[in-house]
Image (tube, rainbow, N blue to C red; front, side, top):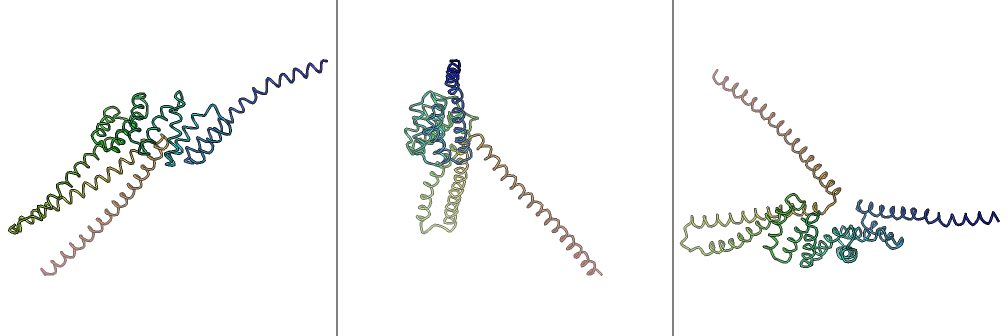
Length: 313
């Protein structure tokens, strides 16, 4: 009888203890799986990260990390330029998991993927929604900047100009301030170039229509003016290309994580140091050449002096 009571209490104890033991074990496995997926994403192994997130979401049927799976899968697809798939992931969080801690960031990326897919009008509505709901969060200036880019995509240059100016006024220290400034400068130069290109054909036509009685001086003056226009247009085009390259770089930096920004800055610093070393070597070479030239010059002066002495004798 005593043995039966002991067995009964032993079984009862196991029934109580097993769920307590298994629950933290399952939770720790779930956490480990999520951490693995995130680590793969941070290392740039996006496809592998997505596979691990799918395993966590589907095979392990996670409840804790459902919205995180959508969020990180969206970023993985975005990094691989699979914008349609990325859009689906972010849209799921926005439409179905509004209370998620990933909601505001997913809303911004939802707008970005709409922009990248060429849906400019809808992208603007999403960016406006972000700015209205989260005017002080990290991606408010990004949203306003990409609203301007979306307006440019629709051909609405003046509204786009206002959006870029608003970035500078509302978020002067944000990570999109430089990009907005350069974008405004680029637009000014594009307008200037368009004006030059409109004027240039008129000048060419005037050169071609010069009367036969035109003096050589008049023809030369118009030809010089034509050449000046060509040079100005070429100069503006070069400056535009430099600005576009700088804007692309600033756009990219604005979308990177803190660690990715650090890596990019380190790369730039290394490049600058390498360039400084090259300049230093060139400077040292020039100094050596100058010393050699000074020595040669001294020899030439000595020879000249000697020749003068011989002639005088």
